[in-house]
Image 1 (cartoon, one colour):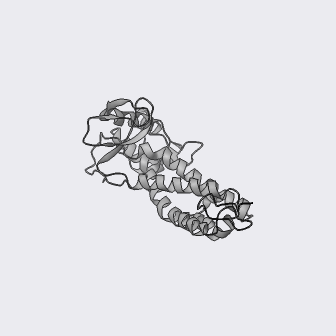
Image 2 (tube, one colour):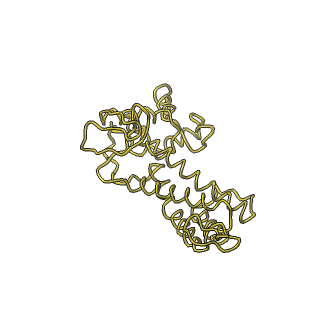
Image 3 (spheres, rainbow, N blue to C red):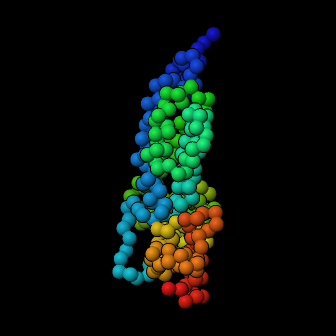
Length: 253
């Protein structure tokens, strides 16, 4: 009877292993990626960092779209992949089901994978885990280091996100193949951002794109006074349209 082979390396499997023990080093590299990449990609989502661009100054309203709005949901998906697998490892491999991974620092989430790297080689779910985590981290790297001279835009037809050359006036969506003017795609992102729950850093940037210069400190003061509340399902996020309504229909200060 031929010996079973590792689905990740093709090497013969020792008894009791789902993937070859050498894959433990691959899992450790994934853990290192979580610790190094995830803080950066979350900073992009929060509006605290935007690779390849610097915020404008002068206190004047800005008409451009916030560049990281289009990757906002992508970052949420990446976070969900990492957290879901960390929770499964803690529950099924470490036998610590009561740990709330969402409260852990990224360095602690990384240790979940690194600390059990060899045990994971015996876990039935590890081939899928490795594939999904490596894909998620590669995706995160593309977000934190996008190609030079490109802009993330949203297709007006299918709402798909893509990076497009800033030098072009007319571009094509790689998802549905629809063609559209680059400016129209930027306006579409702005429209979607208006009603989307955003974290504070990105909220301030989106408001500036709508022509409202409002500081995070001012919004926090309104929250303390009960004039505005975060979105019920996301206690750290606010909708730009709610802030705009407050600015236009009440003497907020």
